[in-house]
Image 1: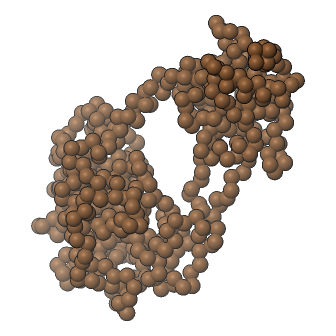
Image 2: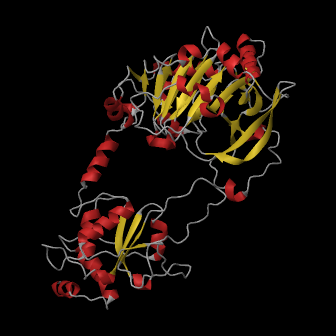
Image 3: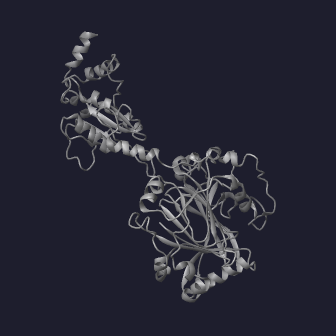
Length: 534
């Protein structure tokens, strides 16, 4: 063995077979590096779906030394030390000059690599799957490599791997300063389980009776799936014993950034809107006088539930609508649809009449909502009545400022938004049930087919008329009010957080937190009015 060890120390690049044998032998000698894999084209294709792959040419193994160390130390063993504890990187050797994909294609490099003829090392970054369109998804093609063209210094190569594998390792395997900072930030993220009153959904529903009466059906024949008109309110009752959001007075910029924004922690600010002109100025009468003749785009549902999920089989065109097979096989819940509300363009004064009739009970078959409505597009003169709060102004980039107005009895079903959100309550209140985004599998994030309601303004009737060839990626298929814990078992592990904002209060919802929003009307104004900053 000693003879072979000495032979391996002197192996040249003209003996690739012996190089691979020596890698295996040296890796298994006491005190030497762990087993390092041989990187094959098949291995790159399969492994790069989950990890970053670093393929070092057998030719480079003897070309690199480390200053102050034994000259026989090669790039492979030193790099292995640096990334041995890195779970998202695989390092091995490969005969790159003879590298060929199973399709017969030669190795291709990114556009920044010019005419590589004899690559010394190649990084194949982890493939980030494009989940936005199911029609264009296909099996993974050959990954694109990034050739190492730096010096023979090990430190330079480790920096190259860190850059393209999104890692933070020093040559001794420890985290770099940037890596330590990142680790500290991740470890400091807020989790609902840290709260002493934290409970799981399984515990919340452990002793509750999920039976409901007062059934109602949207279909005229009363068949298929029905729901309870009281289920929304009964469901909310079940969440009374869960932890509540922290409530604070107006924070300093430093406090908000370090304790809430950086930690991704929801919080209610109780006095952030005290000086807003909108609080006293935006009465229904004022809005009607100023904007009554303006055309607005509103959404309509039968009972106030927006973007809920229900069986596709109860839709009129279910038997004739066909989902492309390539898409169908990628849908985990092809039997469900996200129900998009009906839409209507009407004068703002007519919308105000509509929500008044609903709140007074003279119209009980429809719910109307002015939602996701940009203040700058529809009510530009009102922008000065709502101010960016000093604790986030010039810290976060304002992209959207929306107004939300309804009769107050609406339920926005569970979803997430990819923006930090400040929900500011002007009239009425909202109870928001939140779930952290750290375990999205518990909320069953996935593509869900969409469908859209139709509404006849003359007869005041809704129809489940149209299944769509689009999907939603931000809605949960779980009904958190009446969860099917047999089908969605992991949801039982989710931990809810309740945040109720009243008039004059602001809820900070960090980006990607799942949330369901139950609105309730002001007892005096019989409406619910809010704005939000994204």
